[in-house]
Image (tube, rainbow, N blue to C red; front, top):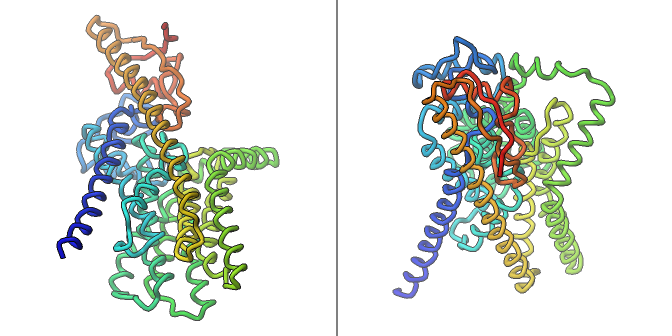
Length: 459
C-alpha cells in the first residue's frame, strides 16, 4: 500500500511541478511583452478608431456595454473577446499576464483531454509534449498568445471553442455514457454563442464541425442528443451576430471583388498555410500512413480510427478557406486549423501507441528534438522580447523627460524591427516616423502629449 501511494504521489507532484514551470515561463514572457498595435486604443472608451477631443478613459465596468456597442457598430463584431480586452485595460497589465498564463495552461489540458479522455491514464510526459508542441506550432505566437489584444481574440477564444466541443467529442467516443442531457442543453447556449462569435473564420468552422458530428451520428444510426442541436443553433446565432455587425459589413464591401483580388488572397492563404501548417500536416500524414500500413498488414480495419480526425481536419481547412472573403489575412487566424490538426495527429498517435506499433527509440528521439527546439527558441524569444521591452521603457523615459521640459511634441526612438515569432511587435503596428500615424496618435493621447515622432535609432 505504501508503494502504491508513493507511485500516486509522484505523478501528482510531477504534474504540479510541470504546470508551475510552464506557467512561470509563459508569465515571464507575458510580463516582458509590451503594448502594441490596438492596445493603446482599448485603454479608452471606444468611440472611433482614432482619438478625438471627446476621447476619454473608461469609467469602470459600467462603461463596458456602451463601449462594446460602439465597437460593434464601428470596428468589428467580436464583442466577447474585446470585452476581455477592454476589461484588462482598466487594470495593471500584471492581471492579464496572470490570467493569460492560466489560459495557456488550460489550452494544453484541453488538447490532451481531446487525445486521451481518461485523465487517470495521463502522464506528466504527455502534458509536457503537448506544451512543447504548442510552443513549436501555434501560429504567430507573439500575436496570438502574448499580445494582449491578440491573445483575447485567438488564444482565449480557442479555449472557449474547445470547451464547447468537449460534449461532442466525449459523445463521439462513448455515446453510452451520456449524462445530464437537459443541463448540457442549457450550458451549450452560452458556450455555443461564445464559440460562434469567436472570430470571422473560426465561427463558421465551429458550426460546420458540430453539424458534421451530428451527420456522423445519423449515418451510424445513433441517437442525436438534444444538446448537440441547441449547440449548433446557439453557435449559428453567434456567427450571425458577428458577421452582420455594421462594421463587418462595411469592411467586407470596402474592396472591389475582382479576380485579381481573389488571386492575391489565394496566394496569401497558400503562403500562410505553408508556413504554419507544413510541419503539423507532415506529422499528421506520417502518422496516418503508419496507421494504414500497419493495420492493413495485420488485416485490421483502418478507416474508422481516421474518421473523427478527418472531421477535425475538414473543419480546420474550412476555417482557412473562408479567409478568401477576408480583406485582411494574418497568420494568427490559423490557430484553429493548427489546433485541430494537433488533435487529429494526437488521436492517431494514440491508436498507434495502443496497438503497439510505435518504436520507443523513434519516439524518444523525436521528443528530444522537440525539447531542444523549445529550449533554444525560448531563450531566443526571451532575449528578443526583453530587448523590445527595454526599448519601449526608453521611449517612455524620453516622453516623460520631454514633458518635464515642457515639450509636448515629443520625439522617441523607433523600435528595432523584430523577426522573432514570439515577439508581439513582429508584424504589428508600432511607433512610426510620421507623427500622424494612427499608433503615434493613440500613444501620444495615452501619455498626454500633442504628438509623437519616431526617430531612427542610433546605436
